[in-house]
Image 1: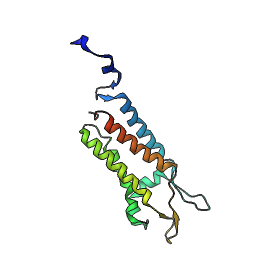
Image 2: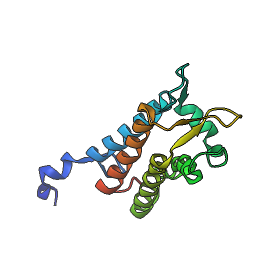
Image 3: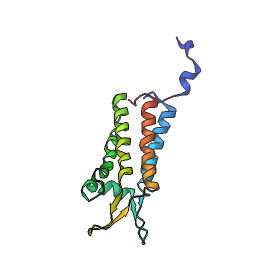
Length: 156
């Protein structure tokens, strides 16, 4: 019946997808964090010139990370967190799909903390790996996506 609606039924729902408003907000914040992280440095190189490796460069060149002499080599595969994260944004999937891809993206993202050294040139010179603001914002985007995936219905 029409008169049986409770006020709380309308408070947290938005749009035809039925995604709770607060979780849609988390998803929007995640996308914004991801996009902003592309323009920020992902690690502090510690070099005298203050070299900065921006997030957009990491996105474009990151596929080679596992092959460029990172120590340990498996830590370079954190770049692959972008794929499950982007796939988790696709509509029309099940809630399990969103949860699994979101958790996988955060797991891969955390591989960066295992990185001890980053090569700076072809000669094999390395610097210590110290995450910077771009990395932390990227990680925040991944974690917000997990919050959105576990907090509400999957978007239709």
